[in-house]
Amino acid sequence: MPSEAPRLIRSVRLPAAVEKRIESDFTAPPPPDAPLDTAAMLALAEEQTAFAMLVTHHCPLKGADVAAIPDCVKLVATVSVGLDHLDVPALLARGIKVCNTPDVLTDCNADLTMMLILAACRRAAEYYTLMKQGWGRTLEMDEMLGIRVTGKTLGIVGMGRIGQALARRARGFDMKVIYHNRRRLDPAQEEGATYFENLEEMLPHCNILSLHMPATPGAPPLMTARLFGLLPRGSVLVNAARGALVDETALLDALRSGHLFNAGLDVYQNEPNPNPSLLALPKIFMTPHTGSATVETRTAMGMLSLDNVAALAAGKPLVTPVTH
Image 1 (cartoon, rainbow, N blue to C red):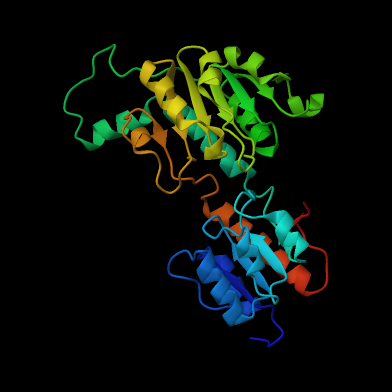
Image 2: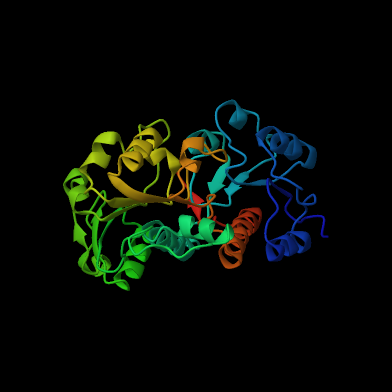
């Protein structure tokens, strides 16, 4: 290992190809057996005189934690697109550069969202539970019926990279795509989707609503009881963006009343310990925040983070800088 190799620490074990590159190209301690929290990472940064800290949501860096980062650290590289766990202005004010991993996880997040749509509409959670229990009897013709996805109207909130990728998949199911976004896309990006400047005007048209926008720290949830009430009875909510976007009490009420047919969720207000009342509803299809959890995507995310570390150590611009 060359003595000049950039010194880095990571808060989680990364895919095998990424770990192999760390071993060959960087100076780093062995990967942790379990995710390290903020206090452990700060102590490790001091001990290792780290040039870069590779973190995920397991290691939030906000408030006093930013002030406690050792002066040796010049880069915080989050192996994620989301920045909710970082106080970016405070990091930049300290002269610590920040980078993330955009673009490389778009398709996998869109794939997972499509899975959530299909599973929620076709009651996959209940079917799977029934089969694991042994099935045991033929279902009646009117028992445990789902709803057809083909031909439905899909409303997308947040028409960025992932929203557009989901829209392309939805068209394969002959779905009508409508969307709400901060700005209207140009016609080439819309690909026939219909824009609603006002979210409240879009909701009554949605058979399925999928959320794909960031959450503003401290902001109230986007989806409240009033907005759930604007959706047609029997509609489906899908959230693979941020748990803070949804008022989970209002979601539970909408599901229990039958106003919502079902929900497909990958994110929650309290992770990794979701609301027990959500877990108790047998029909909801739930996954544990796994939108990017494929070998290809997690490897690409790790490699992009290392590209950023290598670039900064060589005095070059970051590949994917976060600037505000």
